[in-house]
Amino acid sequence: MPLLGLSLAALIGLSLGLLGGGGSILTVPILVYVLGFGAKESIAMGLAVVGVTSLFGAMGHWRKGNLQLRAALTFGAVAMAGTYAGARLSVWVSGAAQLLLFAAVMLVAAFFMYRNGRKEAALAACKACPPPPEPHQSPFPVMAAAALGVGGLTGLVGVGGGFLIVPALVLLVGLPMKQAVGTSLLVIALNSFVGFAGYLGHVVVPWGYLALFTAIAVVGILAGTWVSRFVSQAALKRAFSAFLVLMGLFILFKNWNALGLPGSILSWG
Image (tube, rainbow, N blue to C red; front, side, top):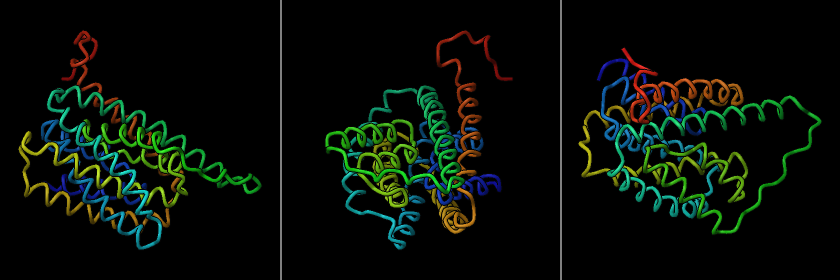
């Protein structure tokens, strides 16, 4: 594995440790456009990498008391059904179409991450502002529908869905923010493992490469979890959202022809 690949693997883990998500958003573009794997192989490998690294991150939050196991298993069990279905459905979807959907997800994630970063900065600056309302639990059918949607997206495009799972756990399950972040990592791990299993038999997995890449990402998430105590989360989210916009537009640009629009509008090289 080239030095660049090792460095980027560490970056994936670092983002998960710092933000509680974002690793899968980075993994697939890195595997496709930097390391040269196919779209479907990259999505499958990305699920494995993010699954293992998220599990290590979840263990750290569990030790700190920021992981609600019952909520993770309830939400995760429903989400896993959607994840497996999405992974099996991906067999009938072209790699280019998957990457286009992935790019759209990146842009949506960038919007929510930037908005959350601004809210956190505003709350930190306003000492006299009233505290946010206490979260409450929604009816199970509503929570189940959200979990199925997140799971289906995970299986189809290889996104762990942390940017969707965290607000779902806060707004629908009723968890406080800190517990939602820790719990989301376990849900991401469960979703990712099931999604990866859904791809087995349909893609060729370079197991040795995947193991080394994953091991380095795990080191990254441990480092990111430690560093997160000293870094402004609001500033990180705003910066990361800008990066996601650039990456999302780049992936759209590279797969423009799959949209069926005139190739002369955009060209590469």
